[in-house]
Length: 315
Image (cartoon, rainbow, N blue to C red; front, side, top):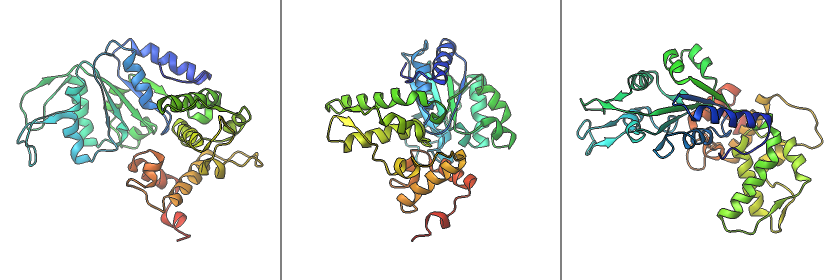
């Protein structure tokens, strides 16, 4: 199934995937950035009757508002300036398969209306077209926020929420399932060595306690990148330390106090911002480093009260 770990949370997650895979129900996957929402979506698809049909993903946070409608529904030739040929949208591409709408909370209210209609009626029209196209598409969505709170705040339509939230799945953050750390770390070591045709390495047993002591604000994605860096920097066969700036500076072995999660997250984001010279977006920006959409990082910074004076004070 591709879901690594033997914690109770992960066992329960695998059970939910098996349960919903045999249905055609719409699924809403919620969890923090880096927890593996796309992996869960793919597992549902691969274990369903639609497995041999397309799995199509669209990241609602990565596409400008002006373009996302044409990405979803496609367009006809000549429907607008620059439409020099017909384009098939994601809905049609996912016909008889699965359409995964990542970061659906970033979708505008206007587009939510059109998405709701497409899901309800199981039909679409390309932009500039008059032909109704029937689509048999399973919808899986994801969100790194509490989507019900977004509904209450007026940022997300209630009718669309109830349409996509037929079968909700919540992925626990890595800090709440630390029993998975050893399995995940060893999987990433073996996977990296195999893919890159490198001699197999292992992890020193003493290092697992350090893994559990860290809070992993970037979740499984951060663990994967930390292991990869350690593999690149370890000349021998055994990884004895994790040479990661974020890991080392945030983890303090002589401090047994536990900070609230928002303090860890704020500290982590500030360190990344300083590391990136205050650059937020772009190839070398903090959002790229954290592997999250710029809009998500911007939202987190506002929520945590992070402004330029916090990370540009030394410049």
